[in-house]
Length: 202
Length: 192
Image 1: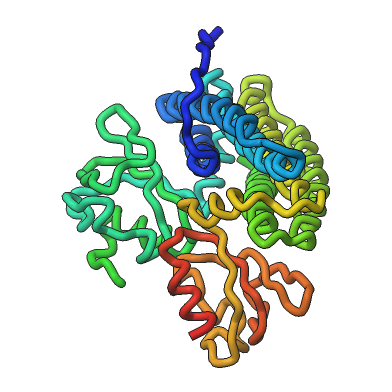
Image 2 (image 1 turned 30 degrees about the vertical axis):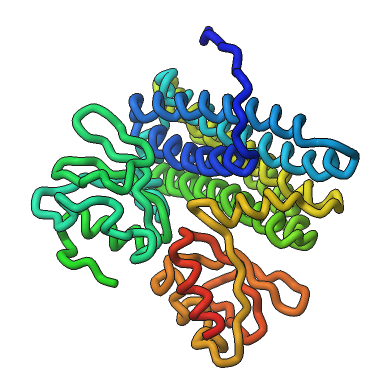
């Protein structure tokens, strides 16, 4: 049983709390599918940690909403906010359910995960080869989102995963990158990482 | 492995991808319905939810009819669980859409959160002088040009689900999802 701690009230704007919940829940789904399909326990564990974070945010948000409601109109409008937050929480729970497939050694039939990898166009997992032009570059300066609609959501270096890496993080040879984004951009990105494409186009 | 069995596996993958894609499309559309306070879009999400229920049942039946050996059972259990998750995501999307269908104007904070998110949903109107007008989606190459992909098209109070051969007309409102960075490019393309 995980030890549950009391969550102390902290004044954080509803907007910030909900935005983080929304972003994290979507990130978690993508990471969780990757963890399940590549049978990666470390990544699965990181998703579970994010799940705790979302739970904490959900509590804080609930408190903020209660404080903010002064009359019936407020209550009506804020119930919508609460519903959306609870949906984001459910999505993060769903992501945690995916990771259970990995944590409990259930796994996905290998033929299916291979097939899935071939047809999945939004999520890619690819190793940086020596000679890729991305090596030594900071994620921020690559401007992947503007260039090709792709975002690096996790980096595995040595044995650790960096989730949602910072803009200043440098890409190194041997890194394993998980990215998500538009199908055409994902293909281009993969070619860059694998050293098949040698130029960053605008 | 026999050709028949390989074909069966291919079908499992196909059905799963359809489930996964539909549940994620529902999330995007649900947030869009909040952003636009659009009951039509919200109703679409609800309809998709029923569709996912059906897809999910078909998927489960397909997995269960795989005639697997006992030592393979775990791998198939994993598949069943993945299916359950897509359905949970679809349910969560339907709950978001419900907020709109209740008829209360969504709280302004919701709009801010959706617009500010890393992966954002945006809508643009196509003007007559836009290079997108009278092109099919395949010809328009919007993802290549902007990194955004079109989730839905609104034309004269009707919603059109985009297909590669769908033609874009001036006056259409495109609802698109992607990283915030692509939003400006899309706006310039749609209404130069």
